[in-house]
Image 1 (spheres, one colour):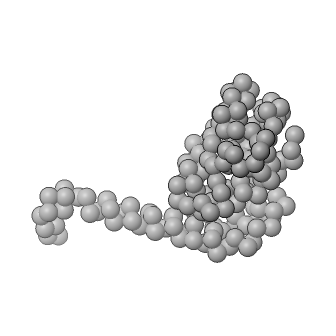
Image 2 (tube, one colour):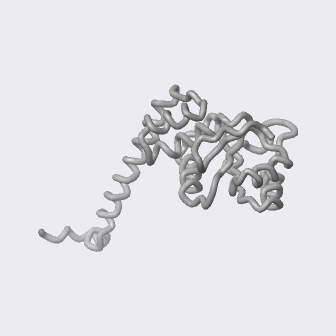
Length: 171
């Protein structure tokens, strides 16, 4: 099996998995495999369909979040991983070509809920020096704050009086 880098107790990354690696992942206690590698990125790589079948045959959950360097920080990609992390019922092993893309995506998702300094410290403790991502992780943290504020404002804007176009009730 490719080397596994344990980032937290519930999340690890690895390079490209082979079909045999899924049984080993299950033996190691992982519950879900996330494939961050787009199909067809390289010849002879495991496809999403093959990964899904290998996961299912080993009793593992499977998610396919294809990610390139151009979309790794997009709301759709980061949001999907954040949702998976929140819903996870056990340890996750994410993989891509080398594991770095999966680690970066984890950092982006977690930076929306944890201080960026803590995210970078966690990565350093796992042997990954990704400090060059600080600005982008700060943007992810800001995105979470702005999204929350936008949701709060949106909820106030949808009060019954405003929904009908009436003036707000006097206080």
